[in-house]
Amino acid sequence: MMEDPHCIINKVAQILFEKKGFNITALDVRGICTLTDFFLFAEGNVDRHVIALAKEVIETLKAEGEAPLHVEGMSEGEWVVIDYLDVVIHLFKPGIRDRYRLEELWQAGKVVDLELGIKGR
Image 1 (spheres, rainbow, N blue to C red):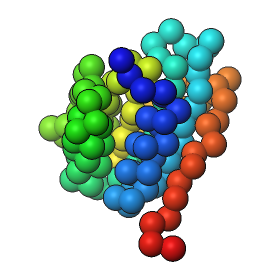
Image 2 (cartoon, rainbow, N blue to C red):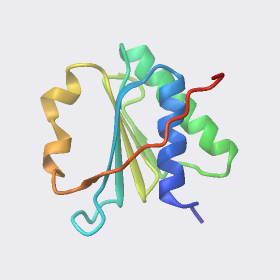
Image 3 (cartoon, one colour):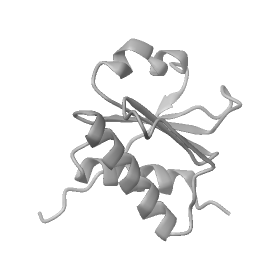
């Protein structure tokens, strides 16, 4: 059984933040979307960075017993989708996120207040 989606979202956001991912946003789409409860969006600098971010998320959560249901886009690295059922993560290369503007599709969703901590301070 998956742990609390809020916990997963914050954990993933922290991983992305520490690995220099940026423009990290999460939306609560419960009640307006049948695909998932939460979307998390972030960007990496280049395709290799996006792939590295995705691998770090997958490996960290897998070590904690959470395996993704489906992963797509790892070979190109322009747009990687990691589906954990209750949480779907979209990682983009700059420009790709702007082109598809997924957040606009779910603008009725509620922005989740992410609890990012800065290590070593």
